Image (tube, rainbow, N blue to C red; front, side, top):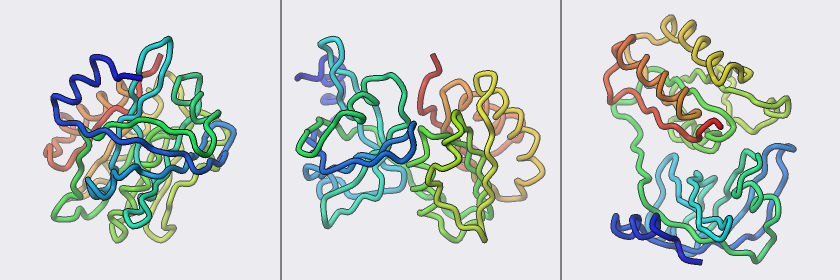
Length: 239
């Protein structure tokens, strides 16, 4: 399967192609699945950084479609990592539900990039959901000594069981059921964050695109946080 015009654009932007091979999978909850893969040489070629992601290609309607997924527990020596899927009715979720050991999937590395902020913030604030959970965990792992407050939007009762990597001595998790297209999360963050921010916060936002845009604007304009202390990236679009 070719990658269509998107693949051509990524090639022009120096995207590098790899093939991942499935080695196993596990059902974390009824709405969340983890797939284990070998990396096809990606980690040796590119190294690893926090919240690292790749574009994975899935076929639907005879056409290629790419979706971005964060690497979970990448192991450069073994050449392995996992991918985690917040399941719904899309092409990627169908692949995650049905793939079996030995299956392969094409991927392109282009666009990823994140550097842990320096100097380290006095406190980390994270706003995410099931789709961005792998990146949330990677971020927490990258700053183990920094206290963190997390607002985590949930869409299902089973999201209570998702594997958020918390340090009970340093991390404060605040679950927010999704309501009104993300408006409940925005309201909760606006109500609570200003009293917690202190002098040197770092805020990382990765929710649906509309919610992320709203919160990013609020952080920069209303709270006047410098752009280097705010990272806001929409991870999915609400239908």
